[in-house]
Amino acid sequence: MMLKDGQIISKHPFPSPHPNIRLFLVTYWSRGLKVKGLLAEPKDERSYDGFLYLRGGIKNVGKVRPARIIQFAAEGFIVFAPFYRGNQGGEGNEDFAGDDRHDAFSGYELLRQHPRVKEGCIHIFGFSRGGVMALLTGLEKKDTASLVTWGGVSNMVLTYEERKDLRRMMKRVIGGTPRKYPERYAWRTPLNQMNELHCPVLIIHGAKDENVSIQHAYELEEALKRERKCVETWYFPTFNHYFPPAVNRKVVKELCQWMKNQTLSWYDKSKNDEGEKKYGNAVGITNDNRYERSRNTN
Image (cartoon, rainbow, N blue to C red; front, side):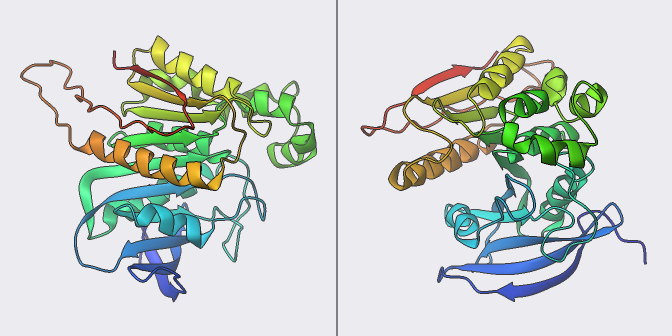
């Protein structure tokens, strides 16, 4: 039997600490490989927006955490988080936004095929290295409802330059330095393709982030605005890569509401010849942890 990308091969219950969320360890098909991931579903039988969670790190660094997936599912989503190829029993080898991007693409298809995911309502979320995976997936999947990158990588050359501690891994996985293989790093850097991204984007970043500098956010914001795309930024002047728990929880709630606001909008081709979406306002956080916010809807 010919398998399709995103098709579930096996699905086994996984212990869930939340009384209203079911977790499953899933094996799914991705470009000829059996890849693993974690699926979270609210226990009722209602339909929900889909949420593709794209993790950061590589191998055992930045592994998918069940508690984090549940956090998003509890906001009213069916969430799927690929482990990426070669991880936790999956086939193949992870290659840092190389061919492993197809595991994200296939994860999107898994949500599209899910019987309880609303049609046209799949959102993409990427944290850290997952930021570039999210951008690549948004470019590939033209019907993406919205995209959020939090502390996200957007420029792989910049990552190589800034993270001396990652250079050995990047040379091993990518095959060499940006000077030796500029095309391999360019392939992993989607900034010059933002004209092909059609969904609204929310950029969240801490100004004191030393894992992924805020320059990644600035470059992505500039690239999107240059192409007159819908982009909103939430910049936190005093935070680094990892936000304080209380603020993290608030931001999760707000970004989830922002996503849902995007699916409340409709195409109106009679008023807009290009059929572009009309986007609702994002909800702001109104506590003492203030942040700088900007919005572009051109």
